[in-house]
Image (cartoon, rainbow, N blue to C red; front, side, top):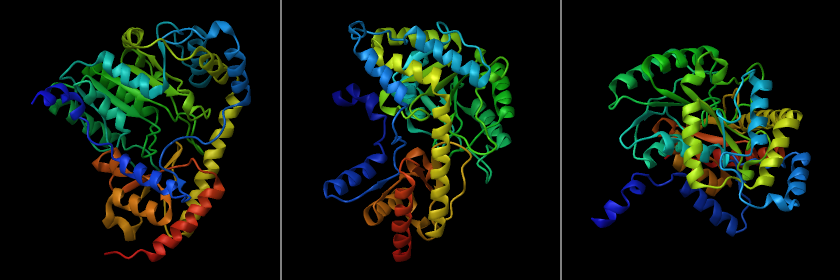
Length: 404
């Protein structure tokens, strides 16, 4: 009984579904098996050389090894403001509307901690990146969900979204204070257009809730689509914050540089709680990240083209292997419906069998919520040669698979 009281919060968290795949992957590699790993969105390239050089230069400065600034050094916050102006034509105040995080995930979790009271309610559409949902659970809040609907082009069905959102707003108790959106979407790759953000901001102002918009994959988009910021919509700063990261677009995942920006009251809350919790990211990392934002726009274009090429290689080679997959509009992922002959397995069992028999690691869709169980997520973090090798392994797996 005592343990239930002490560990009540942590016991609200379910077992991390991806653990089962990770354990199998580790065991295979310990047995010297060659695993082609598409399971985690962990970029496999190097950051820009100029960024690494600046990190080394800054690390040699004796003044840069003490405590840093919990909300981020001024020049890095200013660099994000300049990026937003250049990319979205949005003005941000570096002191009042920007906070640097140890990656956007940490920034998101501490934001939720700063603004959430026990018993509050948030709305998180599913499937969802797990921390979008569970950050509120960790902090003693409740979460209402509804399924995301989209067309064959992976474009959000706006009417269905707002029908479900309005229903959740009126049926949830207490009335939700927060709505989380994430486009380009992880895991489904679904994209949203200006009309969606216009309707969402209007509804937030009417119904008095805050929006948390995650645009971690803003720079990875294809063909005629281009990601926008919610702050391109008039009045959005009154009701919204946005999270962004250097992890994907600059190959800087391990550097842990992310941002939360927007609504001044929410940014002030985040800055305040971080001032109690941490002393900021290592200063040379922040200095180098400033160079990335200020001088590496061309590198971002190269990264985008790389993911487009990998995506096309996966679609073509997997199709020849017997697995037809829809083309995404954005992000570094493919959201793939389980092959017809394997759909009886469900996403976790399919992922397990594909890993043990074909040495291909994927993320089971069920790990992103019940609405994802007919799918798996493929992270495009292997080069094209490895993608084609995976397709050969896949073809053999599907050829030998017998539906029981």
